[in-house]
Image (cartoon, rainbow, N blue to C red):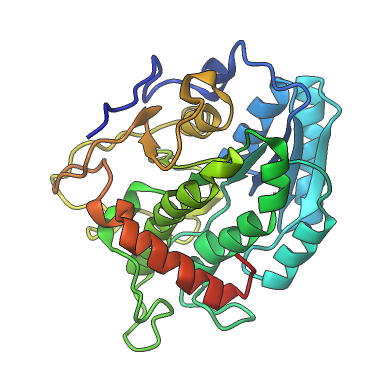
Length: 313
């Protein structure tokens, strides 16, 4: 096993601390879900370092407000709003077709958690569709732009929730068994990691680094709007390794993977608390599972995602 990747930063580090001294002038970034929460803080940090940032959000008004606020707070005029609904593959297609020129940083940040059972226009289960399939179609659709950058980085926001279950390859949409919102969430977050593993392998020749991460537990964002407190299945009694974070701390690992020279050349890995994650140990609420890094699972998910989205990958 190769040596674990570590940095001087940790669980309490903020996005501003990670981005300090980094110059992103001339680099273009897209942050999905950039109008609020972790996405907003990630976009703000990248803009503060001089990046040209596109805020992609479901509602144009929210994206416009975020872009204006970030421009004013950072003094960077190159912050732009864009509409992107990851649960609607037609919306993803329009975003991809509208993009021109190279793309240096793509942060697949947007997500939903523990939603009531819902279906997308294509009939897919909402969490798998939004958290994984939409980002898959977006990232694959932008592959040429990422390759044109020469040294692009893709950052996929996953969760420690992935430890609650693998991808249900035979029933990803919960059509054969009753819907469980937490198993659906776990599946989608495992898929985020597997996507990073396979994309890193396929796109290494293009100079594209792809990594996934756990931002930590950050209450107060829109992600938790469907719940009051996590159920036992999500946060089992006696589990250790859980710590509350501010939004600024939660965005730090995303910003690290998107911009820091400390992880230049790192690809196909899963980070948490600004370090490469240790293997998951049952009862400890951190780390990464074997099934989320499994090469065969990653290849199988890629093939399934192509089938379900119809993208040319």
